[in-house]
Image 1 (tube, rainbow, N blue to C red):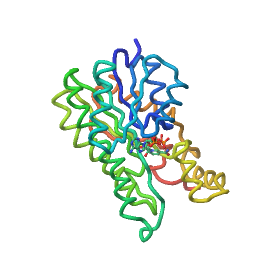
Image 2: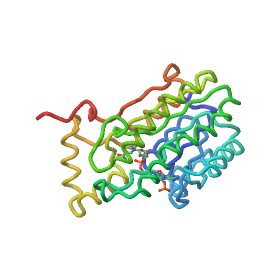
Image 3: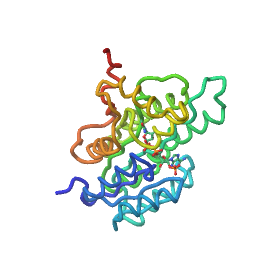
Image 4: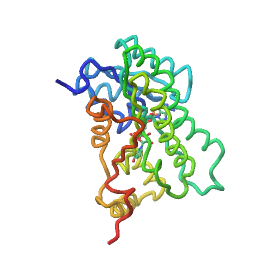
Length: 259
Ligand SMILES: NC(=O)c1ccc[n+]([C@@H]2O[C@H](COP(=O)([O-])OP(=O)(O)OC[C@H]3O[C@@H](n4cnc5c(N)ncnc54)[C@H](OP(=O)(O)O)[C@@H]3O)[C@@H](O)[C@H]2O)c1
């Protein structure tokens, strides 16, 4: 039997690298999937690429209450309920010294990563209770465990996502709703490519190779590797895991390479 047979999954940030890879895997495992994002073009592209009758999309800003209520309702109406939520939409904001970091940048990063996850869980909970339980995966980061320079807002936001998973696991447990956090390391996708360009325009390959060499496994992760971790947590394979923090980072948070 497929691991998400008869399950309905909502994946925010589903038009992005990790989200789209997760949607693909969940569909293969029998789920009906609603992907959520701000940019309709990206969602449509994912829809075309995956080309599956059990895939739909909702255009929504995850930091907004009305948008969140609407996409959860859309999943329930189209697919009959919500069993799995992957709160994966995220934005890293600028990498800048504190003096240059604006208050608006800070608020935006918090709104997408923290408020977005909290709202998604708040409005998914009642739908999951109706189904007798569910599984929620919130995408944090290695920056939810350790810090890098020049990005305090994102670091604080991803630490907060870990806090949300731990606290909401208590709220969910009596209703058979599990809540876990995933902490990807550096993933080889558009978000990371954008960071390389902002840090060293024209020298992206040099930055990438230097960064990779500092990771114990000496490479970036892939969207598919994080998707497989999301599948484990979404499915009954992880039936005794809640409030957990699951790292997939090639050893990065174990410490940088020695030689
Ligand atoms: N890439 C990495 O190395 C890495 C490492 C650790 C953690 N993460 C986390 O992994 C998650 C997925 O990121 P990714 O790597 O797949 O990057 P990505 O391709 O940039 O995906 C991020 C997604 O979030 C969506 N999003 C951003 N703000 C939104 C908002 N206000 N409302 C709705 N959707 C919004 C984006 O959609 P729009 O473009 O339409 O806004 C996009 O689809 C994020 O939470 C990220 O912080 C990534």
